[in-house]
Amino acid sequence: SYELTQPPSVSVSPGQTARITCSGDALPKQYAYWYQQKPGQAPVLVIYKDSERPSGIPERFSGSSSGTTVTLTISGVQAEDEADYYCQSADSSGTSRVFGTGTKVTVL
Amino acid sequence: EVQLVESGGGLVQPGGSLRLSCVASGFIFSSYEMNWVRQAPGKGLEWVSYISGGGNTIYYADSVKGRFTISRDYAKNSLSLQMNSLRVEDTALYYCAREGGVGEPDAFDVWGQGTLVTVSS
Image (cartoon, rainbow over all chains, first blue to last red; front, side):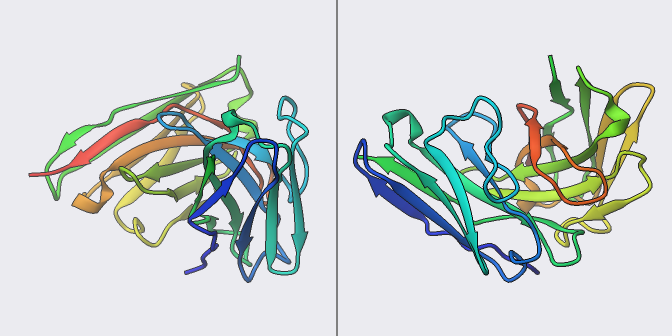
């Protein structure tokens, strides 16, 4: 079955830049989406269609795509950005949805 | 206010059945695709099932195919997940999530708060 691979963890100091990658063979064909999940809360969409930001999401969140890898960038990280982040996409046929393995962002 | 509220979770023995429900409000239910997503304790998100706005296209993850059935009731603005032959590994918080697109995969833009399913003897 199709898989999306993320690094398990990323650590960053306040004010610095965090980058989270997500790799998958079908990403050149399917859009990627990014979700933030804080403990005890439901996931929240932070990036859609690779690089679009929903209303209400801070400008410090951005997304990019290159080949089989998509990247979520958090610029000027704040303490409130500490959370788990998941990429999500679909397989090449567009039927099965899939989530990445998840990345825990720690703000030092 | 756009909202999804799940219910129906609980404790069930292995091999048993459970039916989850998700009531939608604040949007035109029939215009959106819907999904179930689960999260085992301390683990990541796992997509479970999808149903199109019209209910005529349905997909399942391999891990639940043949055991779970997704459906929707337009009169009640409700999404359901019938879970049979439950296994210990089905233990998870189950979320319903709205998918924003029509016909093509899109973002899960609205989520419920989840309902907990525990499969244990």
